[in-house]
Image (cartoon, rainbow, N blue to C red):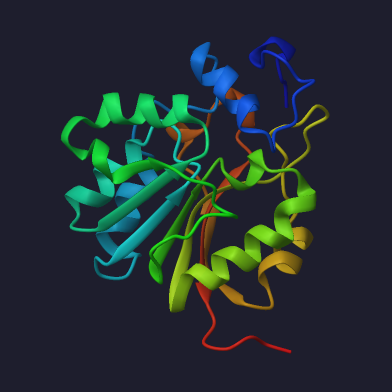
Length: 212
């Protein structure tokens, strides 16, 4: 996998800091931006996800998926803690821009429970020290039987972010409170150079109760 060091502006700022992402969105340096709806999301909205309900999109970035979920009848809440990302999403979404707001996934109150939490480039943007907190927060926000759905980055990155998962790490993070019900490589057209074709479309169903 090849990463270009100049894809990011200033690696001295930690990715937990909103300024890390604010700087990149303001500079239009967003190599993780697909530019549209992932093919696998369109497929899942047709037959894999539960019937329309409430969906949370954390770290929504440009917010393309807001339009996809809304068109399929979902009540969408999309958040990002970088104001420049939210401003970009609102410009692109037009009348749907009010579905996007500035919020901290870990610290702010969110109007759950949700039927789906959608994942695309958010988990891999977080340092691994926050992954357990991410899994706990997703489980708390989902209703029992709800789904963590989206695209997960697996592999090796010598200069993160993005921070890739391994299968063992995914099982450790999600295995106690979720069960994996869908797992496949993403469509080739949806793979960006920064991820080197190492992403998978997965659905993790929230278990009714926590397994000891």
